[in-house]
Length: 406
Image (cartoon, one colour):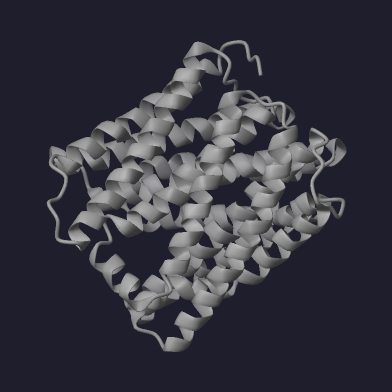
């Protein structure tokens, strides 16, 4: 198929899905500030999240894996064309099905088709992956964690039928999110970053790279304990969760050592280096938050202030870390450009929106936590800076139809 041979189509379609997901996010923020009767917040949220994860995140990473880790003669096999077409169609239909009906029959069918298709695609990629570099290992384990996370989607149906929306229901969802976030996306994105370093002949300590991979891997399974502390579990889970967060912190130390070596050698422009630093700051902050979340007091307060701290944490990962690093990866794979005035304005506007919304979310939560005067016009400010993100993404997307110059 033409879009398999020209992977730019996949990347740009994924970027378009990101734009549309962000527009759904703006509609939700608008509804908080200026309520709209025709907007079903819950249904819109479901579409927003699914299209962001499975559209923007999953399609971009899969396209990058196929482009950089699968040999040309294998990449053009029919199985890749069939599975990718199916995934694109199902995600596109989710843009419509969720806002109209939420988790009803059609949306469930779409998710089921997506899940089965992703299994076939994952199996094929794992067979076609060659090599034993850190980048390849990260990609492989990322796919393993994706497969692990997906088990929750099938289990969830049984939980709803037999028990309803109990603690087990919510913890099943958190199982899915944990291994999708901290498993698939974290491992695969770092695998792609290491591949960029390899392509550009960046020299870094192999020992640090191995240690980073080992500690990140060991921490991933037990770190799920941090996701279920809200449900009044045994104190053992607090100990396990804290130990896992410390292992993640150790892996971060090795990662920062690698990045310090790499930054001295990278011949990138200032925007590219800033994106890398921005994403790594967000990732570091995420790990620090996870360490603090192992303490009962923080768990209790986070639950009470969920609209601020938990939503802030989720966006910290998906926007400040995952999306920023994916945009950088697309730039380094010569898919999008940061050289034109339009693209520079787009990326700056997007980053301003991300930074401002994260600051507002955490600051408002902190003010409520300490019983201080909350931010005036908080919802309006969130709306304004959410619009900034959409505008920035639109500028980036439109600019890609001009002649690329990376």
